[in-house]
Structure formats: structure tokens, C-alpha cells
Image (tube, rainbow, N blue to C red; front, side):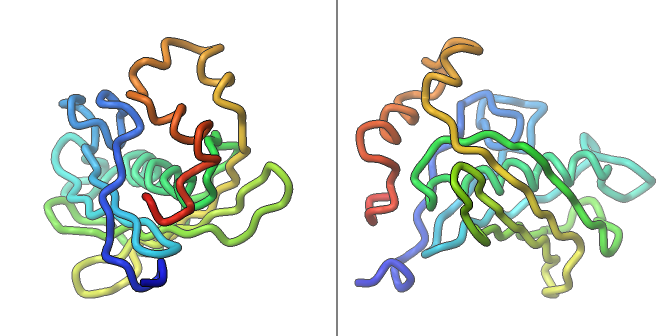
Length: 170
């Protein structure tokens, strides 16, 4: 079965305490991210922890969700990387307590730079926000230089061992 026709697969969180996708972070977004072909996606419902203007998600919460989901495109690229830049375009207000799907994909790769894009849509399919980012591929040593990598639970080793998981095993 071609990758584009395969069923979506749940991807592991960056770490269990990640602010975006960590299931053990009670203050985080607790995103659950799936890969489907050459895209990744997550459904998010912003709540009172993410409030900006009355009844609306704070732009920073929206940006954090975008950054985290965009970071999962690295499963497609098959390399660990870090965010260099992130731009969010707020097209419409993002109401609390309503589902929004963030879908991301890689637009291009130039050397170590990965250019990625995401769209946030509401349950009616209206675009509420878009995001573009540049991620820079790094070696797994980058993370070890900044802290204890045991929280990654073997994720970095999988990238090192397999050169990423772009071989259908993700």
C-alpha cells in the first residue's frame, strides 16, 4: 500500500512533559498528532487555560500549537530539527471550546533548512489561522548539549538508527 493511501498513524509525543504534546503536562496543550502520508495533523480545543480576549484563544497559545504540530513534520523529513522562525497569520478569531484541526506539511528543503506550513481550520472547514516556519536539521548531539535526553524515550535514537522514519514504519 503506498504511503499516501495508508491509515493515519499516531506519532509519539516529543517528551511526556512537552508543553505542546506531552500527556503528563497538565498545563500544556496535550496535542495528539497523527501522520497521514506527507502530512501531520492534530485536533485541538483551546480552553480557559489558553484565553486571550474573552471567549477567544490567546495568539500565543495558537502559535505554540502551530509550532508543536509543525515540529512533527520532522517524522516526514526523517531528521531531528529545531525551530528557527515561526510566523502565524491570524485570519479569524479562534473561539474557545471549539475543535480546530491543525494540518502541517513540508513545503521544501534547502540543505539543513526545512520550510514547513500549517493550516488551522474549524469544524466547518473555515481557515482560522495559518503558520509557516523554518526548521533547521540538527544532530542528536544538539539536544544532549542542552539537557537530559532520557525524556525523549528513545525518539532521538530512532532518528539516528534509521535515518528517520520516512520508510513507512512511522
